[in-house]
Image (tube, rainbow over all chains, first blue to last red; front, side):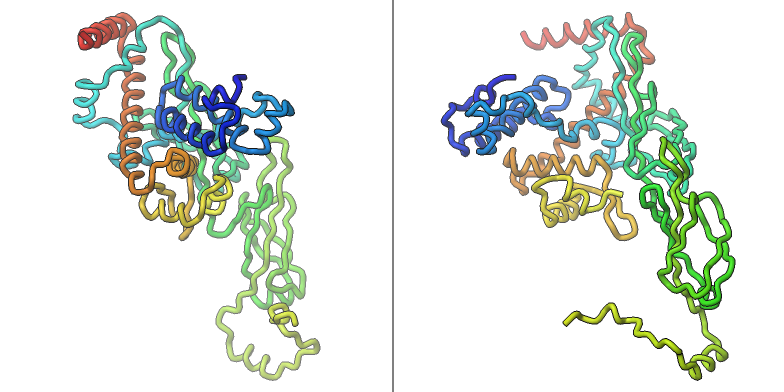
Amino acid sequence: MADPYTTLGVPRDASQDAIRDAYRKSAKQHHPDLNPGNAKAEETFKAVSAANSILSDPEKRGKFDRGEIDASGQEQAPGESYRDHAEGESGRRYSRTGPQSGGWSDADFGDIFNSVFGEGRQTDDDRQSHGRDERYALSIAFLDAVNGATRRLTLPDGRTLDVKIPPGTTDGQTLRLRGLGGPGRNGGPAGDALIEVHVAEHRHFRRDGQDIRLALPVSLSEAVLGGSIEVPTPGGPVSMRVPPRADSRTELRLRGRGVPAHDGLAAGDLYAKLNVVLGAPDEALEEFLRNWKPKNAIDPRLDMREQP
Amino acid sequence: MIGVDVVIARISGLKRQDLERWISNAWVRPDKSAGDYAFREIDVARARLILEMRDEIEINEDALPVVLSLLDQLYDLRRQMRDLNNAFMQVVPSDARKELAAHLTMHSSRAQI
């Protein structure tokens, strides 16, 4: 890898300010998000960023100068680039004509054919090449993500993709559908469709890794006396025994009723935290409580007291 | 779900009040879910780009909307170019594509004279 001083075009005794200025000057010119499709700018920017990451840090710069580290191995992992998102379908989110607009208007045709049809020149050879990967975003329901489902995604060009969502899919996960991206050139293989999945929140369930958490309302008598109740789970309702003398915040576990087993992970559990709901107390309860002398009176707000 | 805290943790040097101002300026446009912001990867990448443009490329925030508007137009055009290119690959036979390319090359070299 090139010497970072050469890459940034600064002398070895350059001040930190001079290094920062040299980096900024180059970033202005070569930032790849401002030069999309320009591979040379991207290469230059990567080299300049790597050089800057050594020289902008006086400690690393000292190590490099003393020969303790070399210029390689310092190359930064390429950050998330805006252009990868902006050039794909997900980029329509920031379209000047609004995020919903797909397809083409008459004005678009005029603009393209009159002025900027330059990229057509890329067709000027018989070389095979791989189609580009297309990025899409798909919002799905919570339970579809947990249990798995198949959802149809309609592309802006009218094609539809049946996206198989595997069980245990997490929010923000990207699914890769091989061969469903842009067409290859001259018989080359098609690119992939990359689908960024967004999982909606559920009214009751909350995901915690492989486990599911749930606030479960119970009546006063169910909590105090215990009994069998029906509990919703991602796989459908199951019955569960509430032990006698349970309370709000008592947590009960239903083994194996969380996220189903997938990808070598065992099925998770469902944790139901009880929440005692009084509903509308009647006269009998009021009468009982007025006369009730608890054997073990408690202070329910003990935890809230300020510590001295 | 990617919330404001996750974005701030993922982008080093990003301050909460900057991100909130960019959202209220509609430079970054996350979804709203139950009163909280829900970001997509493109929103995170865009926030990172805005921070780089301001701090490294030294475009001050007064000028940023102009640059963002031009960038959005550029990427709109590039998506259209790509659609067009894909359509040509599927619809236009290879011979016609070559003819078209030759025509475009001729046209552009004439323009240089």
